[in-house]
Length: 168
Image 1 (cartoon, rainbow, N blue to C red):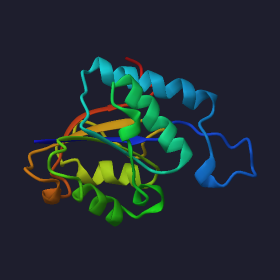
Image 2: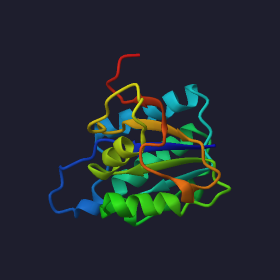
Image 3: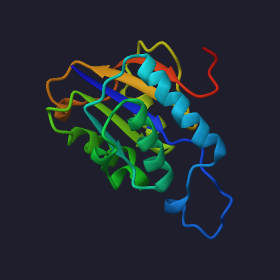
Image 4: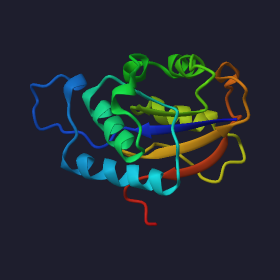
């Protein structure tokens, strides 16, 4: 059994137009939303074996905040270049490269690929329609796999979808 948590980075700042896209930090809303979502995960008793993040500043900041809420060592967050500007195909290849000892993987990335991955991996009997993950949105998907190499489209079981503005 494997569980995948797909997270779109929290809201980022466009205030400094001189910054490269890769260097944009979280804005005030993002800095508020990420801890809230971390607490929601902690409230669901989510346990993580590994956290992967895009190397973009806004994604890594989101990953660090979530890691703190989940008591995951921030220094163990793994940066994956293909999570920044890759295609859906490269994203899926990246997931399939996950070591088998990792049973619960949290991935922080960017739209549109993170939303495409959620839609592509969830089976046809899903409980909700996820077109585009909002900033700091989280989708949890479970797979009956012995290895991440076996990851296939439409074979995941939808567990939950949460985002900051969702009423609880």
